[in-house]
Amino acid sequence: MSQDSSPKPPAVHRVLSGIQPTGRFHWGNYFGAIRQYIDLQNSGESYYFIANLHALTTIRESERLRQLTLDAALDLLALGLDPNRATLFVQSDVPEVSELCWLLMTGTPIGLLERCHAYKDKKAKGLTADAGLFTYPVLMAADILAYDANTVPVGEDQVQHIEVARDIAASFNHHFGETFVMPKAKIVASAARVPGIDGEKMSKSYNNTLEIFEDVKAQRKKIMRIVTDSRPVEQPKEPEGDHLFDLFSLFANAEDRETMAALYRRGGFGYGEVKKALADKAEAYFAEARAKRAELAGNPAKVQEILADGASRARKKAGEVLARAKRNCGLT
Ligand code: ADP
Ligand code: TRP
Image (cartoon, rainbow, N blue to C red):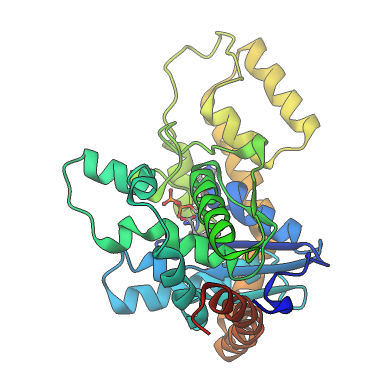
């Protein structure tokens, strides 16, 4: 094996994450994932992609997938992802990742994939899964390993997949010599689980979401429908563990949060007032992003240019790692 086939220790710290364009982004996506991406673009090299290959395992309507992919790019840029700092691209624009996926697949134990929750949950419901859903974590491992990523910011539900990526990387390294950098997940604990309007985890699958860029009026109506208990106005309430309070806290600074908590504990107010305060705070919080999104939506050529530039930078890095992996396992 030639000297240059082992990876150099990373001189820079690389952050990478992907998000599926399977629906319009909601507050859970923002506070659980997107906000972290954006914060981390200032530390080292960062790669963020729109995981349309993963989305293809659930979205089978071509026009819808195309539109949601563009929406995702607009949303991320509007929310502050800066293409001059971070590399933003669409997953399928980097074919090197799909090729790497096969290399990884050859050494991935079936048992490892059988334990992964997306597949396990579907099977438990008695539904049949496609090979795409079953091997989803291997493609995710390829996504991560192709860029020598050190840190992968994700929501809590994706931690298992990062563990799988680490197992796959360790096994490849063990067989073929040091090839891949070991990635680590990074979760933000304070907003690890954003509740939906029914108090369950906010998720597009539960139809309980508040979308980041939905029509302001429609959103207000939805907020007013947030499920609460029926305790009378006078009665003091405990804010901790109350999902309406948790949602309010997402947008509040420490002082506003304390004031609201005191109001809860004192009693003598209705949940309607909290909902109104929440709607006002959310609207103000996303106002700037909303304006930026409208501006970008009017200039689709610019967005396409950003994505094309991102893809070409991403391909350069993924190409290097793929060449290293192919050499180490004997394909070249
Ligand atoms: P959904 O559950 O709506 O299908 P995704 O699975 O596409 O959302 O999640 C995309 C990203 O957003 C993931 O990193 C996930 O962990 C994060 N995320 C989704 N919902 C929440 C939530 N309610 N709270 C915190 N993070 C979330
Ligand atoms: N599976 C992730 C999700 O549903 C999206 C994703 C695909 C991803 N590839 C990735 C996240 C690589 C981090 C790193 O949220």
